Length: 140
Image (tube, rainbow, N blue to C red; front, side, top):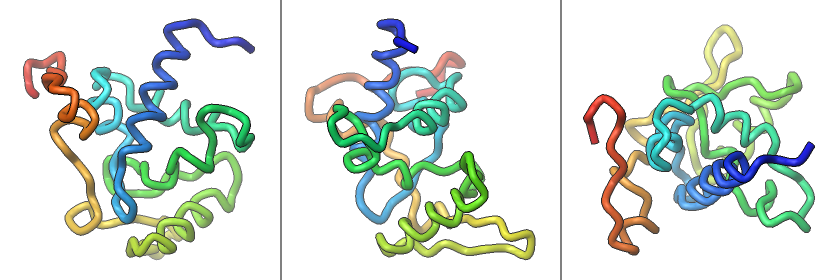
């Protein structure tokens, strides 16, 4: 199904922001949403990642968007569309040197204090001299 221009712009913003997450670091869906000026849309960031193509002919695909670096706000790796999705993400993150723990329930998590990436604004926005987005509640 074709995307609207607004949806296409959102997908582009999400994927571009995720490309800026450094190797060996992770951030949350909510932080990506905040960095692109839509702090109320963390779930939509997840939707974008769910629809990230594996086809390298696309501008954005799972070979150039480090999808594995985005986890939930508690540091947990959210289950993907299939049972091995979280395990796959944990494996890819471990390959980047990120320590991924697993609790008694089998849930994977990452320690944000060690591996978190939470800049006030995207490095590309800093380089362009753009002001940070302001959250709707007035916080930066």
